[in-house]
Image 1 (cartoon, rainbow, N blue to C red):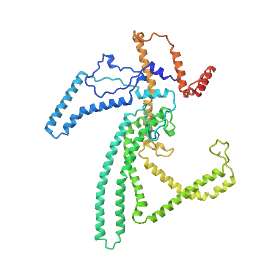
Image 2: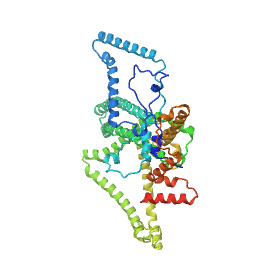
Image 3: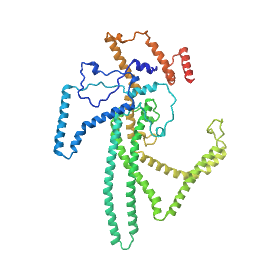
Image 4: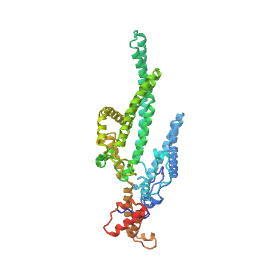
Length: 524
């Protein structure tokens, strides 16, 4: 492995940045005009524009598209139907004539060569080969906890389109759910009215009166809780969509760096055919998981709201606050005693049953038993208590796993299965397969390497075919390409000390001494 320095890579060769045109009516490059058809080769050091200029160009393009289509919507929304119909037909006819004229002048369309290396990929490679510097200034709370913008990373159109479609489908699903809720609420109101009539005219003995009142209270509370939990459930799913984008960028960067430890062992070498199928499934499955996740989260939050209402709010409204506080205090006291005894066991084990630290710099005591007889007595007397404690912790394990599973059901970027059973989570399998396909096809280092090979091949071919190639070269002293490569290799190794360890060293003593000198210089 012999990495090449960035200046040699990008000054000796050149790249073709991508360009986007909002409108290009009357532009048709001739196939014979090579200066027009071929893109201008721009060096990497001058690639890209600033964020402000690109935003300004996008704004102008958006205004242009809006003005071009504004007459259509103006004619459709006008109150003067006859005038608007005539004007709209005339404007459409004008567009049709212009389109036909454009096609006649340029029947083959605009021929644009596919772009291999994008601007953001080139910036990413330059950032990797640049010398690591200490971070200037501290990050804000938003950058540390929420999101940090990276100019060297660009989300694919598939991810953006999937998230936008998920937003639209989620909005429509919430609207449909609310309409169904209104219909069911009206039916429940009619049912409550019939219960009141039955209680008034039929139930003379009053035996069913408490049951009818409790049923009416249950229906009233459930309707209120269902409406209130619409907002938190929808916000949870919306936050999941943004979090999925952040996880996509984080996972892709880890794969680019060769780090697969965040994936389970069974997913670190996926099947190529399964990965191709996974990227085709991902968009549809992501939207379906979000919709089902919203419904399940809404139901779970409604159940939690019902528990809060019947556990805290309704006892206060029924003038039973003292009983509620007694039960709440008893429950908190029981949990506190259990947690306190567990903490006490850990403290006793650390204080009496472990040998002292080997050194003053050690943070913890070594795992070596001390006072073994006392430890056996301690273990014996706590055995029966730990059996009873295990009954409660087993149920808490089941409860916590159910809560986390239902809460994270919409998160396709992480598995909700236990370790060893991740293959059963087909949604997570689709996510991992999609990541691998994007990793193998959009890795900036791999794409940059292929771009260098293609560009150098074209330049060598041009040197052989063109007899005036030497006129464009400088008349300075000739430098050996091998010497230049070695010099830039030395500069790259100095700027990137981690590459020194990854290089294959020869058995020659001078090579070992040279590597040791480089390591010493980088440490200094």
